[in-house]
Amino acid sequence: MSSLFIEGALLGLTLATFFGFGPAFFALVQTSIHRGFGPAALLAVGIFFNDVLMVVLCLMGAVQIVTEPSNYLYFGISSGIILIIFGLVTYTRKVKVPAEDTNDTVELPVQISSPRWFTYIAKGFFMNIVNPFVWIFWVGVVVGISARMGGDEVKLTSFFSGTLIIVLTSDLLKAYGAYTIKGFFTSKMIRKLNKIAGIGLIIFGVFLMGKVIFESLF
Image (cartoon, rainbow, N blue to C red; front, side):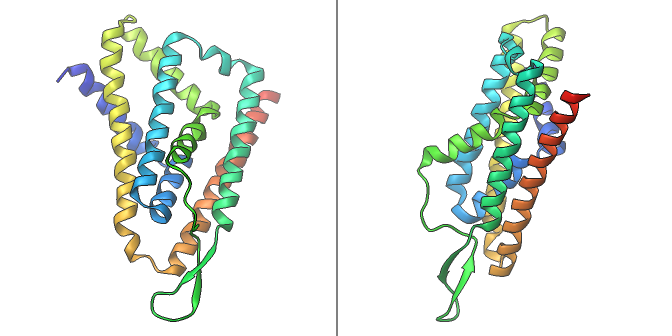
């Protein structure tokens, strides 16, 4: 295995460990518990496609389009609104389903109908595509690594393949972990988890909007 691939994998492991608990993490766990591992895995694939696109665009220099000041504000506000909407839907999501041990019904934060497979991929993809902080992060990483490797396409491909594969693997493990322990959750715990996930997404959205507006003004 290429040493550059291993170096990239180490970067991916660092990202997954220290920067892997943002909005995407909440979405992965919530989807895995309520929909199952399959839909959560599709969500992770959508996030992966988004990361691949960002790396490619950064390498091509097209990232200037979204990092231009006026576009930065637009993308930031759009991303904040999307995260807030996701959060509100997650927080308020409830449906009546049969209780396990009684003839009564209890409210669980689960939807009966299930979106099509490509809906999960699209959600994972667009969750990050309008987030300027994700773009800026990848710009910093790609520019730094490109400068170090003199723009060698083969070396860069090997390095970032390792990074992206580890990030994808990490997201799949998070989803699988949430799926395997969901049997230990009571209906009360699931309701609380749904609310926590929703509040987390809303906080991320408000923070993102506030930060880009503040930076645009000052």
